[in-house]
Image (cartoon, rainbow, N blue to C red):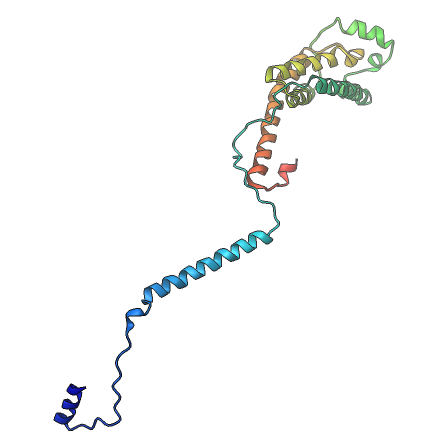
Length: 232
């Protein structure tokens, strides 16, 4: 204050009404950088709270499976289910009878069964046919598409019952033999092509079906999404 008064005397400037106020002590004030950091932290906390609230109110299922769509661990039971496969075999035998019934009414150009094959004593015809293994003249679509397809159904059924690839192959071969030497032998002799291509082609087709099905299941498990193709 003495210095200020002296300066007033020297300069001749009136000091009346001039207020000299000591600057406030800023030692306790918060630096601007810390203020900005605090505001940023508050914003982050608010964002987390909103996300937590949305998660609580969202009732959609969460799919956290780590299964990759490319992993092909086929869902095969650890133990062979003989009783279940026995029930399946009974159904397959009924299906075979039904299939022969359908073929019976198809045109001769498809079934290769003429009136003589359809008539006569069925037991006597069966006895004659089972001793006459031959190479048939059916259309290629029947021999090399339909028979492998049905062989594939036998194969897949056995695999789903816990049987190995080899066991499923022989099951398919057995079911094919039952068909060729069973109900179909009433109308025609067993076919060499059918006895070979039904189980062999069936194993290839069946394994392809198994892998394709597992890919679909893995896709659904990994993504939680099911497309129209997945339901086929």
